[in-house]
Amino acid sequence: MNFSFEVLKTDATGARLGRLRTPRGAIETPVFMPVGTQATVKSLRNEALEELGAQIILGNTYHLYLRPGHELIGKLGGLHKFMSWERAILTDSGGYQVFSLSELRKITDEGVRFRSHLDGAEHLLTPEKAAEIQLALGSDIAMVLDECIATPAPRETAKAALKRTTAWAKRARDFFLQCAGRNGDWRQWQFGIVQGATFPDLRRESARQLIEIDFPGYAVGGLAVGEPHDITCEMTAEAAALLPKGKPRYLMGVGRPEQIADYVARGIDMMDCVLPTRAARHACIYTSEGKVLIKNARYAQDQRPLDPACSCSVCARYTRAYLRHLFAAGELTAAILATHHNIHFYLDLLRQIREAIEFGNLAKFSSEVQARYAAGPA
Image 1: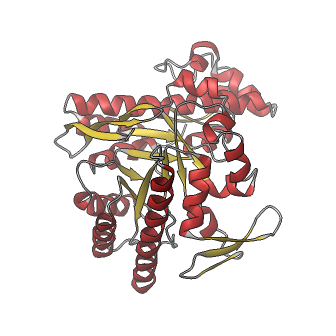
Image 2 (image 1 turned 45 degrees about the vertical axis):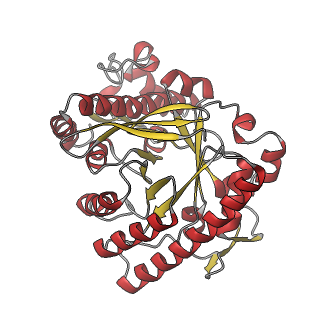
């Protein structure tokens, strides 16, 4: 096995300092994974991601399956070689993207039949197919297909989705073990995904059922989709309390800077979110002093860096006035510079969180970050 995970230290809050070893190198946790939906983190070259210290990025099975196709990527040597990225990659199953196509898909126990948003062609995504695609992509960590539902959801809907998610997880695990065992190829870890909507007992039941299947790592899905932050934290804590202490825990699709330490305090080791890249393209800059809406007229003559406390190469060279001008002029460089800074901010935030866990003061650090963001955007 080329994989391992160890918890190095636990904070009084329940936060864990860990190390996840993969064939592509060790990852210090808690870790934030920049989202590279279509085999690229939008607006950034891989050289920039390496400079920023990204340890692992996320790719999207749904999009890569439709274009350029997993078989082509496999023929070209796998996703790492295709996109020229030598560090770790996690791929999601495509489930969230498929379920968001509410008018274009039909869910059955077999899988999800959907029409491509690109050309309308019909496809069937099953648990086995999602695993097959990710094996062809050659990601380091692959997610099983789960059923995502809207929040809030009736209890019966959540219960039915939980049942189907567990059944799909068993099928995905069996398929994966058969393929990996047959090929003698253990270069990929497969994670199960806890569902259960906003019902604590269903979250616990989902976690227990997945533990019986015995995955090397577990994700908590179906959260941060509109429910209050305290509910997200509660559901995360319910699942994490039951998940094996010696295996990594991944909270999917989170979160805002002031929320991340809360998730870490619930025992989460990994997380991803499109927020830093999406916000950057919409001129929202995350800083140590809170959010900066750089298009605001007050920055027209502001000669300060985006964040005076930031050590990234953008803040070392460019001013707020200049970045505001680039956005006003519609220049592509605006998104490139803003994205570079925002990804640096998130990665550095996780570095500071790891440091806070090491010194036992995560709660204090979290309070300070929340206070800086409580005032709202400038």
